[in-house]
Length: 251
Ligand code: OAD
Image (tube, rainbow, N blue to C red; front, side, top):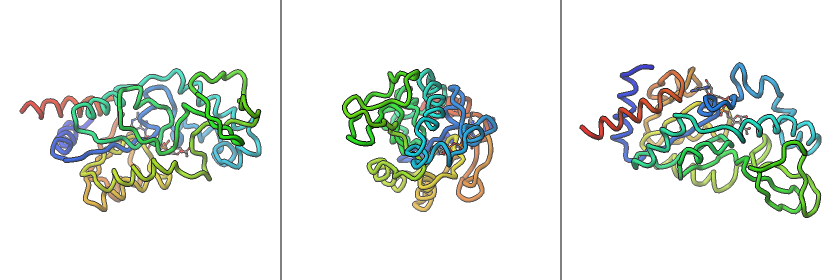
């Protein structure tokens, strides 16, 4: 971990009028949820075309639920890690306006963050594909899958965005507004290759925001728009930035 870059990030956050975070699966890896494109990633094991496309869900829900079951069982027992907690602390200090997350695991909220925009939906609810009844997904019985609607017996789909589905409208509108009006973006644990989500830091950059990347490796953003990359694990870097911010505030 580069101490100078930690100091630089703390300074940028303290000087920025409005900072947002843009997070991806990497921020939850230290909570025990593997990412998608890493060596242990979900897409190494499951072909997203076969398991994460909405057409796949319609044509073979049993198979798709095999993947969802694995994902849900990890999510349901996962706890926020120091990176989630660090972001929640920045928000409480009045230094973070919102988090736009691609994650569906709810760990930002579990850590105490209030203003979380879930760009790819959530695992917490499921909707009936026929009558639109919504049910609580947090107490889903994973032994009895695929789940069916208690009202009309049709298939239930988790309210997560599958490939081929639209981004929730409200999430899109609010995140566009946040990205256009911020002065700094903390881009944490995302490969930034899935669109339209990945356009968020580009939009912010066009409006003059500083892009601070926190990742174990470089991404397309690193060369193109990031002001700097703090290389390492989010669970170590975020608490270090928060500590430095607190020191800077006291000066
Ligand atoms: P990816 O799996 O594509 O990328 C995870 C990123 O996190 C990589 O750049 C890793 O280097 C980094 N990383 C891993 N562990 C880390 C750690 N401990 N600290 C810091 N960085 C770490 O995940 P996403 O970018 O979130 O969408 O993927 C975007 C979307 O693709 C997901 O929301 C999902 C997926 O298909 C849908 O399902 C619609």
